[in-house]
Length: 299
Image 1 (tube, rainbow, N blue to C red):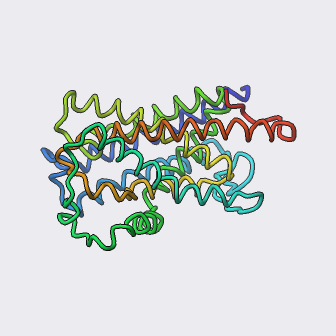
Image 2: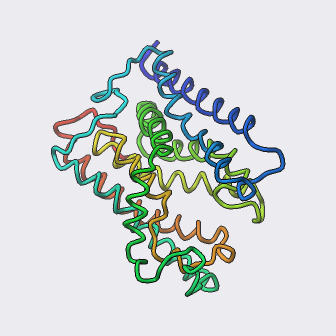
């Protein structure tokens, strides 16, 4: 079996586990007739345990295909951490970049839909006006501390799927296909209203499509920090901080008046950041290609 066929087989085994286990989990645990907003906090936590299946599937795929469990290095699980050769920059980016694109995305949302602005909405959230400036810091800290679910996803998508895809095709189509796969994997939780709610035209198909676009845009950043650092941990941190919504503007926006428009704002913001990142990424590869000719070019 040639190398590409072997990598494709490994990838398909991984995807079968990841989708199979996740979809089975949501079918088993979702209370009948309940959507995300109807569930108790305890039930939500139980349901979201399904976010751990990508990294579990990573382990299962390596076990079945006998790839080994090297924590760091080539074809590893990318669990190592190194701050040498300025790799610390990508850990710092993972912490700060979510604040930037979330804040920019919310600013775009307010431009697109000024009616969602509420100068006193933060009072409904129990937040004191004097400490609003500390909200991004709070989100960053809580995101990093509570990165359990983010590790469950990034340990699989960035730790296993993306390296396999990039061995099978050029980087750009790999990033797009990887984002679509990741977005489709979210379908069960999107269908219960986790990300976009349930009250929008075309539910749940429009939501699934939006999630595919969002995951593609987000996946570019997550794959970038993973490859440049040689570790999944910056992606875990970035994913977790993003989930914590580190934005001051968000506490001045009434979610009942926002809907899908807020996600459109975030997508536009991510696209802007992605363009900058792709330019930087291409330049980094050009510099490294002379000494690392096996790099997968950014085509």
